[in-house]
Image (cartoon, rainbow, N blue to C red):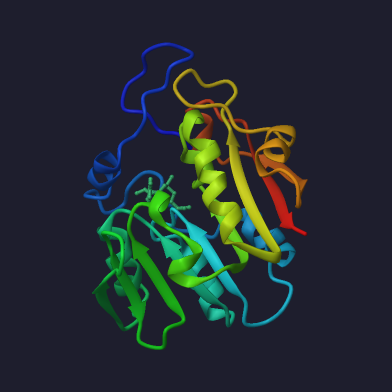
Length: 230
Ligand SMILES: C[S@@+](CC[C@H](N)C(=O)[O-])C[C@H]1O[C@@H](n2cnc3c(N)ncnc32)[C@H](O)[C@@H]1O
Protein backbone atom coordinates (compact mmCIF):
# COMPACT_ATOMS: atom_id res chain seq x y z
CA UNK A 1 0.00 0.00 0.00
CA UNK A 2 1.21 3.47 -0.73
CA UNK A 3 1.42 4.98 2.70
CA UNK A 4 1.83 8.71 2.73
CA UNK A 5 3.10 11.05 5.36
CA UNK A 6 0.44 13.65 4.79
CA UNK A 7 -2.64 14.11 2.70
CA UNK A 8 -2.62 17.13 0.41
CA UNK A 9 -5.42 16.56 -2.09
CA UNK A 10 -7.16 13.70 -3.87
CA UNK A 11 -4.67 13.59 -6.73
CA UNK A 12 -1.30 14.32 -5.22
CA UNK A 13 0.20 11.74 -2.88
CA UNK A 14 3.58 12.68 -1.39
CA UNK A 15 6.02 9.78 -1.51
CA UNK A 16 7.22 7.82 1.48
CA UNK A 17 10.98 8.30 1.48
CA UNK A 18 13.50 5.57 2.31
CA UNK A 19 14.33 7.42 5.52
CA UNK A 20 10.64 7.38 6.52
CA UNK A 21 10.41 3.62 5.90
CA UNK A 22 13.47 3.12 8.13
CA UNK A 23 11.82 5.33 10.74
CA UNK A 24 8.65 3.14 10.68
CA UNK A 25 10.77 0.09 11.44
CA UNK A 26 11.93 1.63 14.74
CA UNK A 27 8.55 0.40 16.05
CA UNK A 28 9.08 -3.36 16.37
CA UNK A 29 5.48 -4.27 15.48
CA UNK A 30 5.09 -1.78 12.67
CA UNK A 31 1.47 -1.52 11.44
CA UNK A 32 2.07 -2.97 7.96
CA UNK A 33 3.87 -6.11 9.13
CA UNK A 34 1.53 -9.10 9.33
CA UNK A 35 2.37 -11.90 11.78
CA UNK A 36 0.28 -14.50 9.87
CA UNK A 37 0.61 -15.92 6.38
CA UNK A 38 -1.35 -13.96 3.79
CA UNK A 39 -4.62 -15.75 2.95
CA UNK A 40 -3.93 -15.39 -0.78
CA UNK A 41 -0.47 -16.92 -0.28
CA UNK A 42 -1.99 -19.89 1.56
CA UNK A 43 -4.54 -20.55 -1.17
CA UNK A 44 -2.55 -19.71 -4.32
CA UNK A 45 1.18 -20.32 -3.66
CA UNK A 46 0.97 -23.38 -5.91
CA UNK A 47 0.53 -21.03 -8.89
CA UNK A 48 4.14 -19.92 -8.29
CA UNK A 49 5.64 -23.08 -6.80
CA UNK A 50 5.63 -25.52 -9.67
CA UNK A 51 8.57 -27.70 -8.56
CA UNK A 52 10.88 -28.27 -5.61
CA UNK A 53 13.99 -26.23 -4.90
CA UNK A 54 12.91 -23.04 -6.65
CA UNK A 55 14.62 -19.67 -6.27
CA UNK A 56 12.03 -17.15 -5.06
CA UNK A 57 12.37 -13.37 -4.93
CA UNK A 58 10.52 -11.29 -2.32
CA UNK A 59 10.86 -7.59 -3.21
CA UNK A 60 10.44 -4.99 -0.45
CA UNK A 61 10.21 -7.93 1.93
CA UNK A 62 10.26 -6.39 5.40
CA UNK A 63 10.34 -9.52 7.60
CA UNK A 64 7.48 -11.21 5.72
CA UNK A 65 6.54 -14.55 7.27
CA UNK A 66 5.99 -16.07 3.82
CA UNK A 67 9.81 -16.12 3.42
CA UNK A 68 10.17 -18.54 6.33
CA UNK A 69 7.38 -20.75 4.93
CA UNK A 70 9.14 -20.88 1.54
CA UNK A 71 12.44 -21.71 3.20
CA UNK A 72 10.82 -24.48 5.29
CA UNK A 73 9.35 -25.94 2.11
CA UNK A 74 12.76 -26.35 0.49
CA UNK A 75 13.03 -23.21 -1.63
CA UNK A 76 15.88 -20.70 -1.78
CA UNK A 77 14.65 -17.22 -0.87
CA UNK A 78 16.09 -13.80 -1.72
CA UNK A 79 14.55 -10.61 -0.31
CA UNK A 80 15.34 -6.93 -0.78
CA UNK A 81 14.58 -4.52 2.03
CA UNK A 82 16.05 -1.07 2.63
CA UNK A 83 15.64 -0.99 6.42
CA UNK A 84 18.25 -3.03 8.34
CA UNK A 85 15.94 -3.65 11.34
CA UNK A 86 13.58 -6.17 9.64
CA UNK A 87 16.54 -7.90 7.92
CA UNK A 88 18.23 -8.57 11.25
CA UNK A 89 15.01 -9.43 13.12
CA UNK A 90 13.86 -11.84 10.39
CA UNK A 91 16.90 -14.04 11.04
CA UNK A 92 16.81 -13.62 14.80
CA UNK A 93 13.07 -14.21 15.30
CA UNK A 94 13.24 -17.33 13.13
CA UNK A 95 16.43 -18.61 14.86
CA UNK A 96 18.37 -18.78 11.58
CA UNK A 97 22.15 -18.43 11.94
CA UNK A 98 23.45 -15.79 9.57
CA UNK A 99 26.25 -13.42 8.76
CA UNK A 100 26.35 -9.90 7.34
CA UNK A 101 28.68 -8.56 4.65
CA UNK A 102 28.86 -5.34 2.68
CA UNK A 103 27.37 -5.66 -0.79
CA UNK A 104 29.71 -5.42 -3.75
CA UNK A 105 29.08 -2.59 -6.20
CA UNK A 106 26.20 -0.78 -4.49
CA UNK A 107 25.68 0.60 -0.97
CA UNK A 108 24.02 -2.00 1.25
CA UNK A 109 24.50 -5.14 3.30
CA UNK A 110 23.91 -8.80 2.53
CA UNK A 111 22.29 -10.82 5.33
CA UNK A 112 22.80 -14.50 4.54
CA UNK A 113 21.97 -17.74 6.34
CA UNK A 114 24.98 -19.98 6.94
CA UNK A 115 23.44 -22.63 4.63
CA UNK A 116 23.06 -19.90 1.89
CA UNK A 117 19.36 -20.67 1.36
CA UNK A 118 18.09 -17.37 2.75
CA UNK A 119 19.47 -13.98 1.72
CA UNK A 120 18.14 -10.49 2.37
CA UNK A 121 19.88 -7.61 0.63
CA UNK A 122 19.46 -4.45 2.65
CA UNK A 123 19.66 -1.88 -0.15
CA UNK A 124 17.53 0.31 -2.39
CA UNK A 125 15.39 -1.90 -4.63
CA UNK A 126 15.99 0.46 -7.56
CA UNK A 127 19.70 -0.41 -7.51
CA UNK A 128 19.09 -4.16 -7.46
CA UNK A 129 19.81 -6.08 -10.69
CA UNK A 130 20.15 -9.65 -11.98
CA UNK A 131 23.97 -9.12 -11.85
CA UNK A 132 23.73 -9.39 -8.06
CA UNK A 133 22.15 -12.83 -7.89
CA UNK A 134 20.75 -13.91 -11.25
CA UNK A 135 17.17 -14.46 -12.39
CA UNK A 136 14.33 -15.96 -10.36
CA UNK A 137 11.86 -18.85 -10.77
CA UNK A 138 9.09 -17.14 -8.80
CA UNK A 139 8.24 -13.82 -7.14
CA UNK A 140 6.03 -13.14 -4.11
CA UNK A 141 5.15 -9.42 -4.21
CA UNK A 142 2.91 -8.31 -1.36
CA UNK A 143 3.29 -4.62 -0.55
CA UNK A 144 6.12 -4.05 -3.04
CA UNK A 145 4.62 -2.74 -6.28
CA UNK A 146 1.55 -1.88 -4.20
CA UNK A 147 3.56 0.51 -2.03
CA UNK A 148 5.08 2.41 -4.96
CA UNK A 149 3.98 5.96 -5.79
CA UNK A 150 2.24 6.02 -9.19
CA UNK A 151 5.18 7.81 -10.83
CA UNK A 152 7.58 5.05 -9.69
CA UNK A 153 5.53 2.06 -10.86
CA UNK A 154 7.06 1.92 -14.33
CA UNK A 155 10.63 1.99 -12.97
CA UNK A 156 9.73 -0.68 -10.38
CA UNK A 157 8.26 -2.96 -13.07
CA UNK A 158 11.34 -2.37 -15.22
CA UNK A 159 13.52 -3.82 -12.41
CA UNK A 160 11.12 -6.74 -11.77
CA UNK A 161 10.84 -7.74 -15.45
CA UNK A 162 14.60 -8.15 -15.70
CA UNK A 163 14.69 -10.41 -12.64
CA UNK A 164 12.11 -12.85 -14.03
CA UNK A 165 13.54 -15.95 -15.69
CA UNK A 166 11.61 -17.82 -18.41
CA UNK A 167 8.48 -19.40 -16.87
CA UNK A 168 8.78 -17.31 -13.70
CA UNK A 169 5.40 -16.69 -12.05
CA UNK A 170 5.13 -13.43 -10.15
CA UNK A 171 2.26 -13.35 -7.63
CA UNK A 172 1.45 -9.69 -7.01
CA UNK A 173 -1.13 -8.42 -4.53
CA UNK A 174 -2.91 -5.10 -4.52
CA UNK A 175 -5.13 -3.83 -1.79
CA UNK A 176 -7.94 -2.00 -3.54
CA UNK A 177 -7.96 1.45 -2.04
CA UNK A 178 -10.38 2.98 -4.49
CA UNK A 179 -12.50 4.46 -1.70
CA UNK A 180 -9.50 5.95 0.08
CA UNK A 181 -8.61 9.62 -0.09
CA UNK A 182 -5.08 9.20 1.23
CA UNK A 183 -3.65 6.23 -0.68
CA UNK A 184 -2.88 5.48 -4.33
CA UNK A 185 -5.37 3.43 -6.31
CA UNK A 186 -4.39 -0.12 -7.20
CA UNK A 187 -3.42 -1.13 -10.74
CA UNK A 188 -5.87 -2.88 -13.04
CA UNK A 189 -5.13 -6.00 -15.12
CA UNK A 190 -4.99 -3.79 -18.24
CA UNK A 191 -2.49 -1.40 -16.63
CA UNK A 192 -0.30 -4.33 -15.56
CA UNK A 193 -0.44 -5.82 -19.07
CA UNK A 194 0.63 -2.52 -20.57
CA UNK A 195 3.42 -2.00 -18.01
CA UNK A 196 4.88 -5.53 -18.26
CA UNK A 197 4.45 -5.57 -22.04
CA UNK A 198 5.28 -8.22 -24.57
CA UNK A 199 6.44 -11.60 -23.30
CA UNK A 200 4.34 -11.51 -20.13
CA UNK A 201 0.85 -12.87 -19.38
CA UNK A 202 -1.21 -11.20 -16.65
CA UNK A 203 -4.01 -13.14 -14.96
CA UNK A 204 -6.57 -11.86 -12.55
CA UNK A 205 -6.46 -14.78 -10.09
CA UNK A 206 -8.67 -13.88 -7.14
CA UNK A 207 -10.31 -11.03 -5.29
CA UNK A 208 -11.17 -11.48 -1.61
CA UNK A 209 -12.73 -9.30 1.07
CA UNK A 210 -10.09 -7.27 2.89
CA UNK A 211 -9.25 -8.00 6.54
CA UNK A 212 -10.90 -5.58 9.00
CA UNK A 213 -7.67 -3.63 9.67
CA UNK A 214 -7.57 -2.53 5.99
CA UNK A 215 -11.22 -1.45 5.89
CA UNK A 216 -10.55 1.55 8.12
CA UNK A 217 -8.20 2.99 5.46
CA UNK A 218 -10.76 2.62 2.66
CA UNK A 219 -9.81 -0.81 1.32
CA UNK A 220 -12.62 -3.23 0.50
CA UNK A 221 -10.79 -6.06 -1.23
CA UNK A 222 -7.41 -7.69 -1.87
CA UNK A 223 -6.63 -8.64 -5.45
CA UNK A 224 -4.14 -11.28 -6.56
CA UNK A 225 -2.54 -11.19 -10.01
CA UNK A 226 -0.28 -13.86 -11.53
CA UNK A 227 2.20 -12.44 -14.03
CA UNK A 228 4.08 -15.07 -16.03
CA UNK A 229 7.14 -14.59 -18.18
CA UNK A 230 6.64 -16.72 -21.30
C1 LIG B 1 4.36 -2.15 2.73
S1 LIG B 1 5.86 -2.80 3.32
C2 LIG B 1 5.68 -4.48 2.79
C3 LIG B 1 6.51 -5.46 3.59
C4 LIG B 1 6.37 -6.94 3.22
N1 LIG B 1 6.39 -7.18 1.80
C5 LIG B 1 5.16 -7.58 3.86
O1 LIG B 1 4.33 -8.14 3.14
O2 LIG B 1 5.08 -7.56 5.08
C6 LIG B 1 7.05 -2.15 2.19
C7 LIG B 1 8.48 -2.44 2.59
O3 LIG B 1 9.37 -2.00 1.57
C8 LIG B 1 10.50 -1.34 2.13
N2 LIG B 1 10.93 -0.41 1.07
C9 LIG B 1 10.27 0.69 0.64
N3 LIG B 1 10.92 1.26 -0.39
C10 LIG B 1 12.02 0.50 -0.64
C11 LIG B 1 13.08 0.55 -1.61
N4 LIG B 1 13.15 1.51 -2.54
N5 LIG B 1 14.04 -0.41 -1.56
C12 LIG B 1 14.00 -1.41 -0.63
N6 LIG B 1 13.01 -1.51 0.30
C13 LIG B 1 12.04 -0.58 0.30
C14 LIG B 1 9.98 -0.72 3.41
O4 LIG B 1 11.00 -0.53 4.38
C15 LIG B 1 8.93 -1.74 3.88
O5 LIG B 1 9.48 -2.70 4.75
